[in-house]
Structures are given as structure tokens and as C-alpha cells.
Image (cartoon, rainbow, N blue to C red):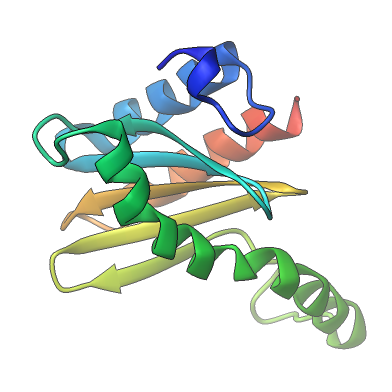
Length: 141
């Protein structure tokens, strides 16, 4: 997608890298890649045939982004919990996977930006590698 369609501060190179990471890690099951901040979002990739237009995709994904943006508010609470009890049995928070009847939503947050991936049903183990690679690219920005 072209830079003029971006409403966030993401640059074209990072957008392309995130899509490449997601497509490589999740393959043909990948449905959508969304980059978002607490106030804006950009759809970086939508598998062909899912929506008629970019605007249709934005309308459909807006409620999902609104829901997943709560992660920015949750982050300080998760950090505080980790600091108070060490959260020894779980370790630090990494990413969120929401399981639905016909697929998954994966949310990875790094600071004040995040990426959502939606997929068809698939093996859940593939998400860890993708989330780690996304974290690496977002942390380097």
C-alpha cells in the first residue's frame, strides 16, 4: 500500500517488513496485518478476496482495533503485577492470541505501537516466531 494511505507514522519499509514477516511465518492462513497506535491504525495487508475495497476492510476492522487497543492501557497494569510478585510462574508478557471458531487474532505490542494479525484456523505454535520477529522490527524503529 502506498504511504499516502497511512494514517499512522509507519514508513513504507517497516510496513513491508511486517507484512513479509507475517506472510512468511503464517503462510496462506494469514488474513490481515494491521499496524496500530492508541489513536490510529493502518491495514498493511489483506488477503485477496476477503473485502471489496480498502475502505470496506477499514470499516470491518475498526471495531477489532478498538477492542485490541485496550492493550495499551493494560500494559502498565501487567508491568506493575510483574514488579510486585515477580510473576515467576508465567514470566513477562509477550503477546496475546484470541481464539475464535474459525481463526485467530494475534496482538503484539511494543511501546506505543502494535500489530494485529488475523488468520484462519491453524497450528497455534506458529505465532510465537511471528510475534518475536515483529517485536524485533518494532523495537528497532
